[in-house]
Amino acid sequence: MSRRAEKLSEEIKRELSQILQNEIKDPRIPELISVTNVDVTRDLSYAKASISMMADEEVKKNAMIALDKAKGFIRRELGRRLTLRSVPEIAFFSDASIEHGVYINQLIEKVIKSEENKRKNDGV
Image 1 (tube, rainbow, N blue to C red):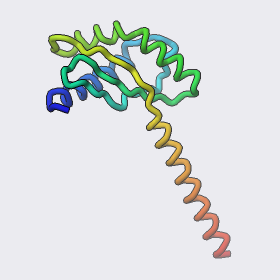
Image 2: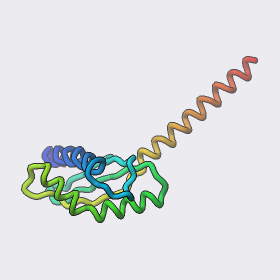
Image 3: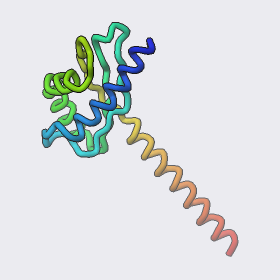
Image 4: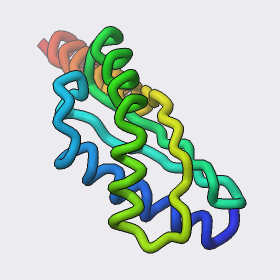
């Protein structure tokens, strides 16, 4: 990826996060939503935004539909906030990396507690 595309990806990620948190009022979009990554094509005409949210599958599905419906508004807002000749077309993709990280942390905590309990019982 070119340096310009990398820089634009970061700018879009930052602004998109702000838009999702503060501008979109659709009740289908949960409060705990974050933009984990944005990849812009070399020609800067398309952007893939990875979206992560802490919610069940039905809520996620509805949120992705709501984001898809709000693409025009989001693109206009990005155009207003960023100084670009043309704003990339945005595609949203669900990203489960944050949920996966939380799950891994829970597993690690279980193992640590289990080990602590085992040491206590062996020591008694």
